Length: 491
Image (cartoon, rainbow, N blue to C red):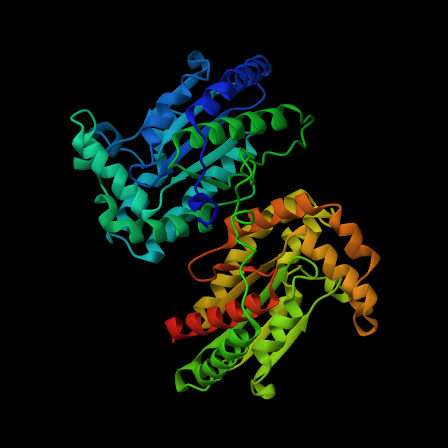
């Protein structure tokens, strides 16, 4: 869930100062409109890796907001008065009225996250606490609150550098000395616990928005733009049926995202490709023959741009497999029978038994890709699907399935060249349709949907692997190598 948040963004001070005045004006105008209408309260919650600048973000928020209508709260250990009441009491007291904002550092996530990081609670207890929080936020949203939850993220090396800098300053050393999570020593534990937190509590009405915090200027512009867009979107809605959802997409500050960060120029020479292909195909078959795999199953999900080479990659994976032990599942538009069921129904029916392999050429991700972009389902349905998909894949993993997901990426020029080649090749003409050409017109919308999909559904149990597929040889080998490495790690 941190792929986008680990991409570096180089926004300099001059760019920040150039864009800030207009952004500040727009936010203040939106805030004044909100105050006048008193239509809904706004809840801004900030959490993140130690050293990511959560407190600094809170301080800077006051430079772009009318502080008279903002209540900011940073919660430490409960006071005696608070300890004598239910845990959520102190948060209820600080909720903002309609038309105003409440800004919180950590808030109701602090205690359960800290206990989990320090191993003072098990995963079951942790998820029970998170489930209670989810119900709390659902109630706030149902009452009209706009909830924006930000996780400020740092890579491990960047965090170490930040914490060393904080220690050297007398003004900031206390932040590290009083660190509840032990700084970078528990980086992995914090990251895994945060992922579980986001998976359980990321909902259509209160999704988590992960922000790379290594560049303070990018961090500030991203958060401010997200807040502005969310307020304006809600103010533009009318009637009792107005949605209460928060944005799922990070606003575009520069052109860096999980897709543009890929190096699509990577390639393999044909002879190297043949050697690597044979190596990993043999390795895969030996892994699937292991006794340990008889108690597991393998689920391979292939998504990607049209003409990105999913079929070719799948054929190389299954080329020397025992055909009795795998099944390739391809999905077109749902049938009438499938439409009469929840959308995950047709995928549940194709899950493999222990010792077998299920390959999905297109999958349940159609709900948050083509169905989203082409308006084949409601916005509420595709927003809700992120959590439903994470639960689905978690259930698979808990039952012993090894879930490996691939997005094969090509650029627009490469796609056009492949489309034209298909039209000129008799036995490939069936692969190209008018719909494929029409989908190119929505290239940017699909790219946004893919980035959101990766951000909200790439988990430690079912991570996405983004494959640079302009060169088919490179793509096929990367897919096979990834499958082998994940199998070895899991077995």
